[in-house]
Image (cartoon, rainbow, N blue to C red; front, side, top):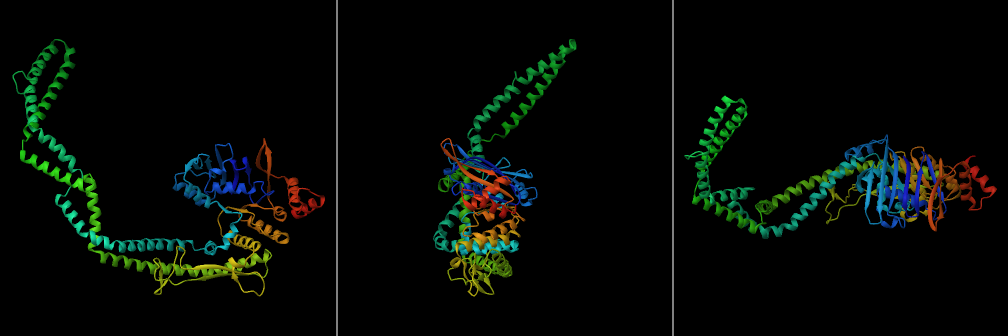
Length: 567
């Protein structure tokens, strides 16, 4: 559940910090006071797209922050751990939108992506916007409502994996067929290039080694002269360093016999003599290996020239040449074995079509079972909401695949149109009057009926739904009187399973609040600001009375409010 929502410099809101309670939280206020601005701010917090236009005039940025109780929410804990964010019983989500267009998101004070904010938000809140009930008037959403009610998420995920693989391979085989003529044209070119590169057979890192060796060979005479000179100076001349150090070593030993303070110096001289011996040995061995070989020098130069030729033709470096060879090698193999590759892919695709068909058929069976339950439950919910003679029908159908379809699936040898949801097409039909045949919901339902159908669906889905918070922005659109009271009772019933936040303009619904908040618009230093406050019991009575009679509260409206509230 949400514990508090803080909004700064957002639209008409300068700064509000509202604490919500469990159960049914009702928000009321005059039209234009800013009720829906709070819901918009909540939408922003949950990952909706942002615009710099929401930043309050003269402010640098808008900030929306929510604190949620997630102590028992295992899904939230898992997603935070997967993203290396420390979990705590209180989750703090924050979104900042600056006038410069920057968009920053935080969870528990750790910077996160907007995608992660949205993923976490989807585990916390179901936000039903002011016009969202209109989504029922789009047939493509009906399958989502049905699947949300059913308990076969695992089957959908399994099918999804198969279907994604099918889509990928179908796209791959089409791409291959489109490339067939190009590959045929280029096959001879690729063959020539492969032969040219393979004849030289460059190796990664070879060029650096050859250049090092070339540098040594080109300077072999100089190396021989210098090493000979150094060796003679150190070891092989009458006045060599080694002879001088030997004489010094003997003289230091004599000094040690007279004064022991020369012992350390004697040790250093011994070390120097040993070091000079090592140096002379290295120089002698190196000198013996110096090879003045014009033939080998010529071979290295020819090899480097060959590599340079390949570099100029195929990318500018030996690495690029090797990458080009690998690429054209694949293309050449594909061209040489085109028919075999196509056949292999077609066989795999055909098997996937059958597997997808089997999985889709299983899901379809589950949908039919779920449809029977949802039809019964919606009918009961609608009866409670003032449509007693309704008939709600979930129609599930399938369509055969046309000849041009890519991602069709196979069931018993027949091809069917398919999507990531399976091969079912789902549409809700309804009759709201006795004796009438059910007709497509998108064509016959009135505005008030659509609102009640949506509330009926939400009511029955909520018992299966694990989301802790449901938000309704004027779900009561198009209803009044006795029906409004029924809507309020449905919201109250939902509040037994979830924390509910609902914006309403109807006293029958506001009267049932566990916590009541009023939004009002005020003039502050020549600027309009929206504020929200939690109402005490006596204030609640006045607010419900105001909803009944308008700004002028009468004794009758106060008594009526008390009666609605059961006081």
